[in-house]
Every structure is written in C-alpha cells, then in structure tokens.
Length: 346
Image (cartoon, rainbow, N blue to C red; front, side):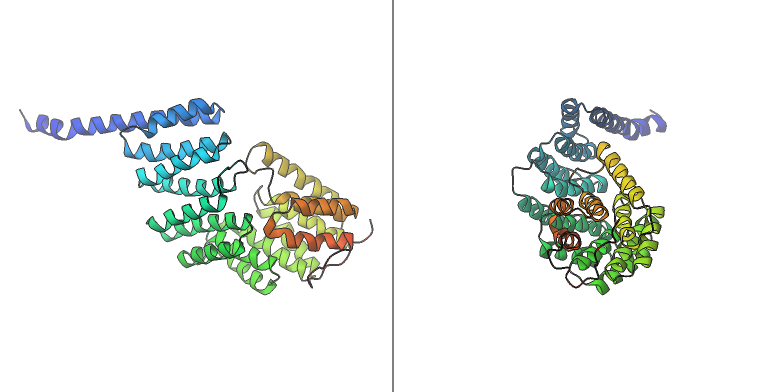
C-alpha cells in the first residue's frame, strides 16, 4: 500500500465521515428553518428535534436553540425553556449560546408564560455567570436581561445588570442607552445626558441615532424645544424603522408646543411604521412606542380620555413619565419639576 492510500484511510475516510455527519445535521437544520419561516411549526419542531438529538455536537447546539425559538413562536414559552437549557450545555458555539440566552430573556417576557418570569430571568443570569464568553458578548446579554427586568418593573435588578454590562464593556451601546433612559425616567437629566453623549461616540454607527433620540428627550424636558426638534429630526433621518415611531411621536409633541406644523404628518408616519413593524412581527403589540404615539395624539387633540388611555399603554418603567405628560392635558398630576407647559390651542 503506497503512502497516498495510507493517508486516505487514516485521514481521508474519517474526514469524509465527519463531513457527511456535519452536512446531514446542517440539512436537517436548514429544513427545520425553512419550515419555521413558512409557518409550519409542527414540522419545524420535528426536524429541529431530529437535528438536536443527532451525533453532530455543532448541529445539536444550534438545533436546540432554534427549537426554543419555534416554541416561542407557537406561543408555548414554558416548553421553550428545556431546549434552551440543552442549547447551553450541548455546544460551545457562540452563536447558539448567544441565541439561547437572548431567548431566555424573551421567554420571561412572553405573555403566555405560565411560570414565574422573575424565576426564568434569575435562572438565565445564573447560567450566564457560569459561561465563559468575551466581554462585549456578555455585556450585550446583560443589557438584554436589564431590559427584561425593566419591563418587569424591577429597577434595582435592571440597574445591577446595566452595571454588569458596562463593567464588561464600558461603551456597550445597549447598556449606555438603558443607563441613560433609566436616569432620564428618574429625572436625572445631567446623568442621562452624559450616557447619551457617550452613545454618540460608540463604534457602531447604527447605534448613534439612539444617542440623538435620548439627547432630544433631555432637551425637551429642559424646555429647550428648538434643540429637541433638531435632534429628533436627525434621529429620524439617521435612525432605523425601530426608532422612527418613537422619534416622530416625540417630534409631534415638540411641534404641538411650538406650532411649527407637520404634527399630523409625524403622527401618521409614526403610526404607519409601527403598524408595519407589528405586521412583520418585528415588534409585539405591547411595544413601548404605542404609548408615545398615543400621547402625541392626545396632546394634538388636547383629549383627556386619549391621554389617560396612553398612560395605560405605558410599560411600568415609563409610567411616571407618561403620567407627567398626561398631566399637561388633564391638568391632574405633578410634572415632577420638569419644564412642561400645556400645548398651544389647535
């Protein structure tokens, strides 16, 4: 037997077998993903389960994480948890690990979760502490968990996760934005401004519009409406569809005060983009933009009932701000010392 034949049997045959195993796992994963995209969730579950129980360790981790995502789409968040746990123990692939932790936070916020949301988040945090990963990656995940704690109304736990994120990556965009927004909701305008200015300097250019939006809101609450108008316009021009409904709604608030016009147009465009995001499934119907858009309509119409309805739409962390804005229309409540004055008569 010549040297080439020996090398083929020693190296080539095992490599061919491993390649076949990998290719088969990727085939099952791809078919499961295609079924998921077409809304054939039961078929997707079968294919991902087959890939997850195969012998390819890479395919297993990816498939377990994908299976958790499918269960979430099916409105079965409690069933999603075990696949996510498996994803974190069956693979060292960063993509699968990242997806599993992100889905842990999404599961905790799912409206159909029968278990305790706080317990789910706490479990995710405990697992994350045991997982070795690059600092920026852990910072991103800590920020996502912080956002989830904020949505659950636990400012203290959210603050701890924001600090953990910034300890891992001092210029993490998500953490800086959450830090700034938390400070703003607490009335710490100087602190909020500091965070949002740092956000303008991050490496990721697509995150900088969030800094513009945050600084615009700081200017608004300082009573500097021309500056707020300028910053919101920039945020709309440079931002993404996800940011546009927020920025346009707040621009409408500013222009209701100043009488610059385009109030109706900005509200209409904010509603249009938000409806598109709902339809495409990019944001849920509990999106925080809903209350801001509703409040912009209430200010435009000076409608007390609309203002109260907008407050009911606000998530817990932003309820205090919603009440302050509603007080401008209803005349009931405290604006917390922020420079808010009743909008001009239409």
